Length: 114
Ligand code: SF4
Ligand code: SF4
Image (cartoon, rainbow, N blue to C red; front, side):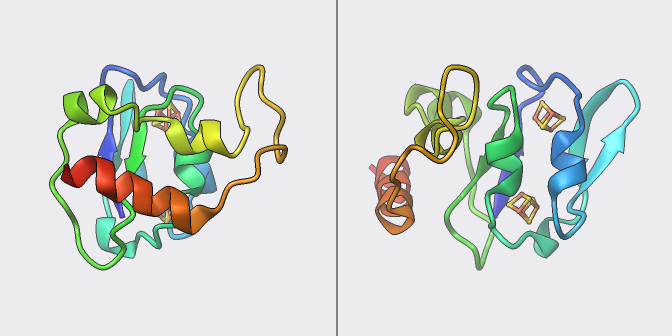
């Protein structure tokens, strides 16, 4: 479930607002989008892979919201890590990465829990 919009990283492009299939975000004039309808999140990771600023964090837990700490996620290298893993972003080849999504999510959970 979507858990974080980093205020310091967001460049206010509103791509996440546009790509979210369930309209979770609301645009904010002159600011980062807000998570307005978190319970509508389908944990599809679409916003995270589109975000050009690595400003979003979608937790693998789909059934309930979990507490996250932005500094810790940065320390763990998790902000933007899925986008990188699937080969999206400058200098990467989209679709080239062979990611086992299940393994990736288990590793994401393991990092946060330990
Ligand atoms: S896609 Fe990323 S940078 Fe763009 S508005 Fe959303 S959070 Fe901000
Ligand atoms: S993970 Fe999917 S459903 Fe959830 S906020 Fe991001 S784009 Fe929307």
